[in-house]
Length: 190
Image (cartoon, rainbow, N blue to C red; front, side, top):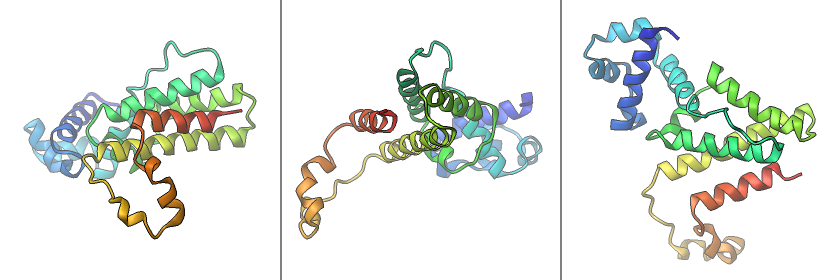
C-alpha cells in the first residue's frame, strides 16, 4: 500500500466511525482529508476498491502474535480477535462482509485460521469450509450487534409459529459474547 493510499484509508475509517458505513463515499473521504475528490480517486480508483482496502485495514487489526499452540484454542482465539477487530470500527462488519478483499491482512488471517484446522486433522475441504463458517458466524453476529439498538420482536408475533414459540425465551436470551462463544465452540468441536 502506498503512503497516499494509507492516508486515504485512515481518512475513510474516520468517516466510517463518524458517520457509519452509509456515510462513506469518495467525496466524504476527500472532505475529511481536505482535498479534491480526484486526489482520493487517484489513490483508490473507485468506491469498490476503497471498500476492499478499508476491509483489509479492519482485518489487519487481528494480531497473529502470541496465539495458543493447541489448534482449537488457536482457532477460538483467532475468531475472538477477528470479532474484536470488526467491532472496533462502527459498522466494521458491514464493510468487511460487503467485500471480497483478497488483500494481505485478510489472507494472513484466513491462512492462520485454516492452518489451525489443518493442525486439528481437518481435511483441506473441511479446513476451508470451517474457516468460512467461522468468518460468516462472526460477521453475522457483529453486523447484528452493530445494528443495535434494535426493537425486540414481540413474543406475540411467535405465537402461531410452534417451534419458535416454544424456544422464544432463548431467541433473544444471552449476550452476543455468549452466542458467539457457543457458535464457535460448535464449529470447532472435533
